[in-house]
Image (cartoon, rainbow, N blue to C red):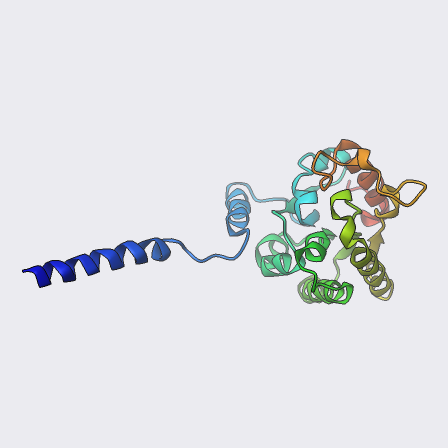
Length: 229
């Protein structure tokens, strides 16, 4: 009898240990956010051939981005604190289905801050992977890359960020239907230091004034200022 109880206890303990791990579905980062986008799309299909903003939380927090670009159809698919590999992972869900006429990318900020092992070259190579993936599926789509911004809270990563910006800019100079939007220098003061008044309390994400600077920098690259009729 005792032996049976002992075995029963073992079974119960095994279940208590295993059930939580079994119940937790193993999904990649930001899976829930992507599923939320997909759910939204199923309820109301976004416009085709619009301008797609995709990337990390600097776009995600730009919730009123459409207001900055009247006359353009904007789809915002910024998510989480995403890195370039995250955008690549979810491209089938948040890029290709929309058939955008232009893609504006902001990503690389979190890549630089992820690990001391991340170099400017690795950020460039990640961007190239995303770029060629887009080109494969959307060969005629315009692609604009918004440079990594100089967030005061990430000053220790500035050398990597600056070099990554430069390398991506040089790469895009040789590619058709592309542009590089330099917001880095627009967010520095006369001494080359980040203007803290452009950022929120976390000194990482921007406030309204910061987004106004971005909008002014991005607007000329939206199909070379050709508004949709």
